[in-house]
Image (tube, rainbow over all chains, first blue to last red):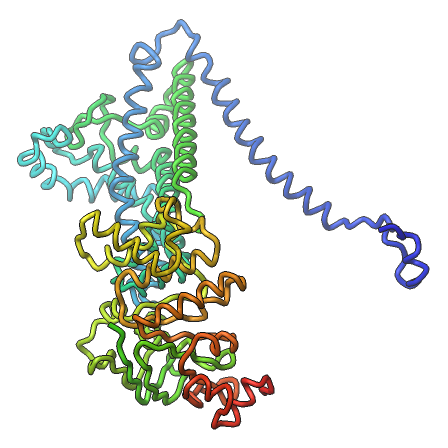
Length: 316
Length: 259
């Protein structure tokens, strides 16, 4: 360090260390990466700004707002959005974890691969197809089940009935959403299960654990935070899903936990899709304000997911 | 409690690849048997076949007999899960369950075997297992802290405590000190010397001084060439193997004139 000038003398062929050489590749890569990172922030900011700017008139207007006030309009929609998404998640997460575990730890290798592709294929089906399937097939298939639920479990508020005659209930919508978010959650859960360190699995097996016990001791604790974030990603998709819900659900914009009757809350995204073409003036602004509410809810869900993951985080 | 294991004509495969060929040996109870040999000679594979951990790997299988207490461990009626409850294992790298406390790590094996235990009995078992692994004095004040917070050597002794908590007859150790510093290694070696009073111990090691220090009998594995199956060349008392082996290959290996 004290003799930087003597090195070139001893090794004249190599030149000084301080050549001032620039390495352009580094700079270009750094610039591209920074630009990409900035772009996503800008996009998000632009969307938020657009939503706030366009929904502002809905807050300040003196004109007639549908259903009296903004909260009375958006409230039931928000409720329906969250309810349908929660139904989807409650149904889809256990199934997804089951499929993920089957693929990663139970199925013979060849079957596992085929099943994996099949699940990925589910994600490629357009949402409108799920919507039609839900409206035409699933809602009909659910009719006897709704009847049975209303007759036998009617004392539970969720199944108070009277059972819908069309089957196009919030529960049906939730089930369609469940099928749609299933591939996302399954694919992520499977990948996490497969990443479980062999060392942990063998630790459990060597103690005399059965396969299920090994999964309980080694795989699930390792995968827990990952499964939570997978479920939250699914929730994000369920919250924003539009076409499938718009096609399936028969809406009467009420707040009710009765899942199987013919009066159902709508969802924000579906409501926008259905109302927007005919909206004019402040109605448009009100719809955009409901979009802002959805934006905020999605954000909160993601923050909550991060918080849960950070709290239960496992260093493996 | 300690048991004798009789291995005869054991062939161990990965799919169609024969990894270890025709091993026959007797593993003495209340003694330490060390397995030495160059990398890839199949000593770890052989070790894992003793408690049926080998077959955990897809397509892996075993032919031949491993008899303990008159019972062939590879008999059709034998459940590998119960084999592993009788033959415990310690791995190359310490692997405590990362989400569990020190206490829960030690208790894990017992809880697995679905034995309901009163809190007091469990406390006693955890204490005696940790004492057995020479770890009690270092962790008694922080039993509810994560096992991953311990040093590498302490983690490895925690894993030994976890293994002996289910009271196995045999303890298999797969290079238990290879990830440890010399002081932790010494602690584990001292522990092995104590444990052999109660357990049959089989240890795989790359460290020949370690084999010489801790073991009563030593088996030397070798393979003719890469891709050829590993074989047991020689099994004898440790002092004989290290002073006067009957095979030229053994002598070359332990004197460092290998290959």
